[in-house]
Amino acid sequence: MQVVVFKLNDQEFAFHIQSVKEIIKITAITHVPNAQESVQGIINLRGMVTPIINLAERFGFKEKPTTEHSRIIILNIFESTVGVIVDSVSEVLMFKDEDILAPGDEPLVLEKFIHGIGMLGDRLLILLKPEEILGGISQSA
Image (cartoon, rainbow, N blue to C red):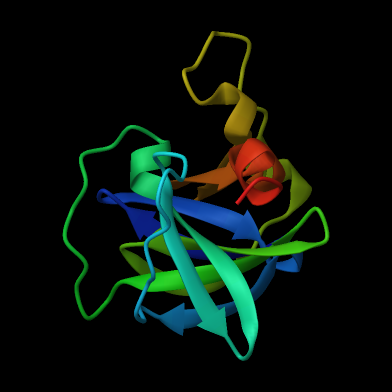
């Protein structure tokens, strides 16, 4: 499995590369009145209106200001294009199936969002399911 690794609140997460359309720098975001809390707004992505989600807010993390390292990961979900704001994007990695652990049987707050835990040496990366994270948002934004 090939993944795109990114940081959010000093933790490493990853999306399967097949879900990632592109990665762009933070651009002007137009806020939408009465949008869901984690919907930051919309952008014009080469003539296409694209909703932007604040992933830190969606996960209930303390929001940090954007920096020169902040990025928007553009995802293809449910035949829609949606962007998520992350603190930084670091690399693309390849995982063998045996290096990915199931999320586990213990109840985790974000378990439904987690595909698995990728182990790479002493690093643990949380592999996310973008379709679950953005489920109710991408279709209504």
